[in-house]
Image (tube, rainbow, N blue to C red; front, side):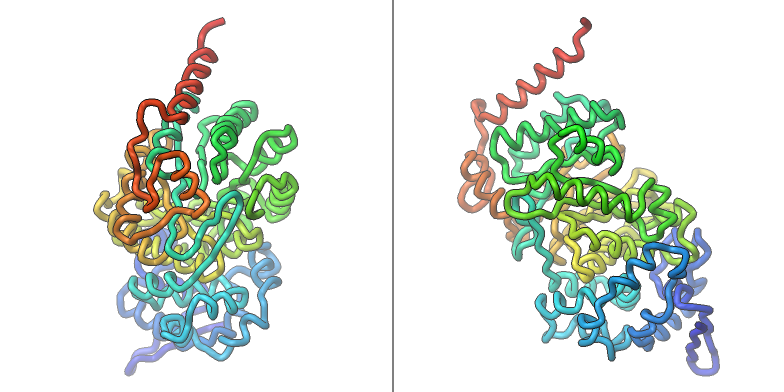
Length: 471
């Protein structure tokens, strides 16, 4: 369907819904690379004015990627909840923005309509919002998930403890785990990005994380961020798998470039649920996304990268995951050129994910060849904290020595918690007090040289040394 908007004597024509959405997007390098971006500010404003007048119901009548050729589209269409949509069915995109920002709309009202909002609707309304609008609206969205602790409660923010090592060395990983726990990080997950895809090595890493969680009764979960097929194999071999991880995207072809489809994700979800390893809940999936992934796979079909990203959230919410995060600046400046674009994308992703009912976290990050620096990341981190981000990354020194990118540190999490008076997951907070790591107010205490976690770390280092010794 063609869309037209006239300002004075000049008329703008948008050939279809995906063209309108793309032209209304804030400028970013990935959309210019794809050839879908507006070529002038005037074109962009005309597209936004046209989009603001578009009824939400129009998104139910036109797909940005054909229903017949894309299983993500079919998932979005087939699971749309018409009853949840009814309270907002009469609104246009611009009126939805005003409704989201109105004083009368709270977290309960948003929870009632979330199943009626499609990813494309969420993407569309975000394109009409300023950064402060994205922060305010996201702060109203409350999404709570559980496995061994509770993520997303009001006034809380969790941290993924990310103890990566360039050689998967267990001594180095154990030292980073120790470091993070003593800084009060790890309530979201202790999650390792492995170098190797060797199944025995992956299982050893899963056992290492499970060992520290079990030995000290830590109310958190472990995850080795390997491909979903490896996780299924590990489960079949009796490995202690808490969460199943997978990178996902917003089109069927992009997901196939990751080696997955919905049937495989269904299988993994069922396998992890069958283990019943959670103690306070059964949210067992962990997904990561990022703007530009569909384009980098040649699978965006002319859809702008932010709308593709929102469609990835449509995939994620099928599985009621414990954690979802956008790795916002990781793919590189070809898709998000500088700090301004990274900040905007992070706020868009967080808003859209929360609006759709996902426990959205963010890897506040950038690569060293992007036009960004740590001050930009400080700004995004602070804005996301105000917006109610579910969790952030905790990387030793904020510099991931395996993935070679800049993220957030344990100290950054302490800054945000102190600034905004944010607590950790309540079960984890109680554990920190019981272990003498934090006081009643959540402030860190000196660990001392006899802390039992230090002994565990030394044992892990000794085992690693023995395993490397020539036989």
